[in-house]
Length: 341
Image 1: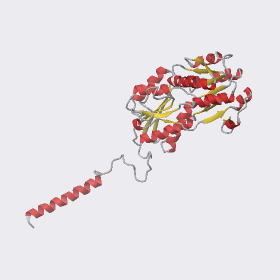
Image 2 (image 1 turned 90 degrees about the vertical axis):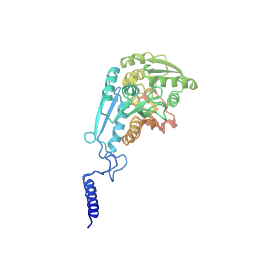
Image 3 (image 1 turned 180 degrees about the horizontal axis):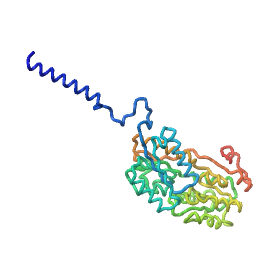
Image 4 (image 1 turned 90 degrees about the horizontal axis):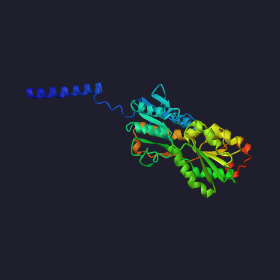
């Protein structure tokens, strides 16, 4: 054999050995970002996820949104202690504590943050523009300067809005209390979401022949006094989805029922506490909707490209004890659609 031919054969043999060696060592193995064979899209297989949840205060609506979010993650295979590390922090209605939690989360190695309610979302937005943030129970994300627009958020924030069907709520009030002329509204004027709702209430009230009497609060301790200030001045009371007032809803219910003043609320936890009724958000479902958005982000979707979502179907909820106490005659068309507790 010629010397040149021998060199060529040795070269070919060496190339084959190297190629087989690389294949055996994983040198050409697929990226770990690829979905494992047989795994469904959205599967957490192979993922270790860290999620932070920041909440302004504990009350049934916000707690329900958080639980709905976690239920969806669990249903899709994300389990705390296995492939999910969860950090839950509640500020107990303390703004300085809220800001401190936000800074903590911003400096943590989190894959995603859930911010529940407008103050939480604003604190978190100020703390980081890098970690994906999902918001829920936020009435007007644009007014709160959290997103550029509902369709194109444009940054690291998206999620779900709990904008109430306020016109429908006032209409419910008028149908349940046809003789109502004046409505007291209790809210925290420092909450952006409450300001937005009260503005809408004032716009919609005249068409229903209603006048609005405002009673503002600066802390949960003020709620009882604000409710008492409306006695003798109003035919009904309306409470929007105001975090401060709802956290002290029992005080409003007590005053309303003792003085036989019908109480309509922005969400059902106030009805559960003894208020007359609502047509509004189901916060467990809203949280679950936010959880579905979280799955998409964990799969690589960008918040900037995900529209802020709202709930399309609203629940009518009435309280039987309040109906009986107030002697309310519920119209048949409302009774047929309502959940009466």
